[in-house]
Length: 82
Image (tube, rainbow, N blue to C red; front, side, top):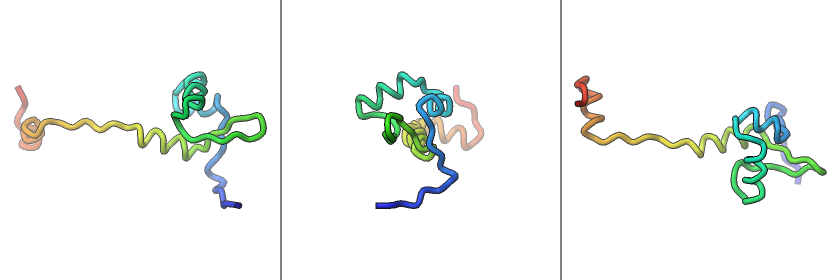
């Protein structure tokens, strides 16, 4: 099965992926072994990460802070919280 891969979605080596994400290469390797982390491909003897897979991993790993309603109401009204 052939898919059209955009040319602007480069394949990165583990050291390149580590540099791009600021996640150490040993951590990426541990995550691969454990079945965690970003999607990756095995091409011959090398492991490659698509830049889009790294971006998606960061996006789904982002935690959004939820503020209590009372504090949020104060912030919206311009009143300072004590």
